[in-house]
Length: 132
Length: 417
Image (cartoon, rainbow over all chains, first blue to last red; front, side, top):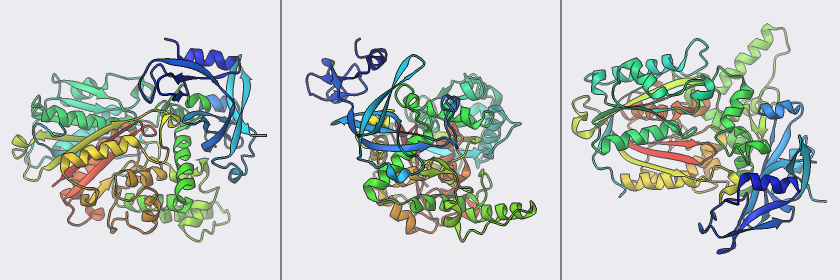
């Protein structure tokens, strides 16, 4: 089984966003999955996605779960996350960085964003920031 | 396909008080609901006549460190040695248990079964409850990116507002309405309208010698960031259902034997269930739940009814936006028109489509695994004309809609007097 969570993370550690493209129907499965979400074929191949996309939706979290409290987040220091579309139908949930969270109206659905890889505890985290 | 092999009816229903009960475990909550359900059977029932237990429960593993809750509860009330099992479908655990109970009776395997739901959530701090609830989302790809449960529904809200122009005021009107209903429900966690809450806060401030807050009206109060802080933008505290302890129980019987127990059974005329991707990024749409649309379509088809035939509904308003999306997915209003319907008062008790007369998850409370069963308890009371101050006169057809996670599971059930 090749299109696994751990493979996806290995690629991320090399700063690559890799998806499983279906050789039959052409749909890009992001995050990767072993069976195509569209046509259910298991004839897939890895493709690398460029880190440019559009913001599909988002939220700014003021009451975080414990791992983010450990990172210092809370009412005084909220964080944002959202869904980003990198290619048609290829979407992923990720943290949003570089936005002014005191002005939520500045975050607009449909705006251009680009990948920003952050290093945390020896792992690479995929985040997105406003496109330059 | 799509029909029950034989008819099934609800012959009894009960629930515990919903709220925060530091001195109660799941055991006491379940027994409280069970005893009320048994008492509600008009002509009486012996526990030994109940052949099996289907128990909806989301996460007692973490909340109490206790699993195997099916036989644990069955033993307490004497359903043992019959089969007893826990059913888990996140926040739709109760609805899923209900469906399995219905199918077990319809199949002929059992004549009388108990369907229950229970959750004891207030032992843990809010941050840990946030972790547990978020585990109903995609833990690898959503939780790791910082998604919380309110955060996921906030994503749905932002997308809905952007696509249809739904307003933050319309979301707040859902909360105002459900608190008005909850104020009339003696089992609700919050038996107070938003106005009652404003008054109590003003009095508290006065007692402490602080300047009295001067909110013009409910909307002004709900816009005050101190009174109604952001949980996950754009959702604020009063857009979210609370953390709740509680249990609910219904007793189901085959139509053939139902009259032995009551002259007013509530007939199950439709059941449907659907599923979808856990993660929002894997779904075709973010502003509507496919699992809910599929569940509704199956239930309507089985019942031979259309959305306009439903006279009253309990829907899964874990967040205010969720009620708006639910009323669209169920076909009560067109996609994008749920917000306007609330604004026009159509979903109030005296409106053309009363929604969440119990107070909904927002005011009645949301003990996750109990919710799908508690919804049936409200429909049972309403269809029998026993809902007291919140009774909608003369209703004969009711619907329940129970969602798991951010929409990866949904059950819809239709009942007729």
